[in-house]
Length: 269
Image (cartoon, rainbow, N blue to C red):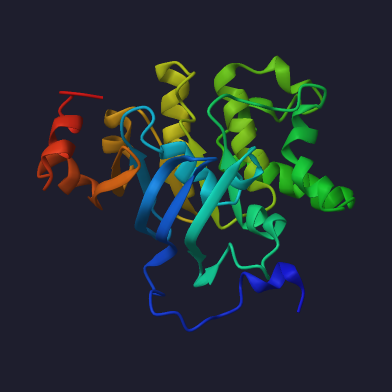
């Protein structure tokens, strides 16, 4: 069996369910002797937006990076527990991390298009790395991903221009298109709007609403108002622990934990 195929293999796992795309089970992570995540269980629903929120240093980004095995690339990083994708533990020794990152794409906090490449080449960079050279396939993939990122109409006449010629918000949508071009199943977004103005933020949020029809989205945000606007489910983290998780409406209107209530009402954070 090819390593790339392992992740999609059906397994009889007790936590597997129709509504969840990913399960985090007893997840602990950190660096050296520093423990960031202290043992976390979380179900991430399929084709929905799950917001991860909490004060700085609570483990939001560490959790996100554990979901596609980026965390382990950091010096002295450690991970234990399980992260199940379609019922398969992505940390199993039989699973290739590269295959995980193809299925679980990521968009980072600051726009990071490849500065020496054109808009078009940025959009298809992942496909190039996979060895795809067919011009028609590349053209079709570029248009599809740029449309999904709500960027096509703004750049279709200047695809050969440098990616750095775009505004910050456009660059971030180009990074979303780049992640989409290899057709992942899950998209991780680490505070994708934190460096953007309200107009650019609205464009990203509009794209997220459309994307959740096809993809599972996990959004780390420091902005509780954004979590309330765009997410279907919200997880509140504090000091490396999951304090509360549920439908976003319930978390914001009727939280069951006092810490959650204090955070969503702006009393701390």
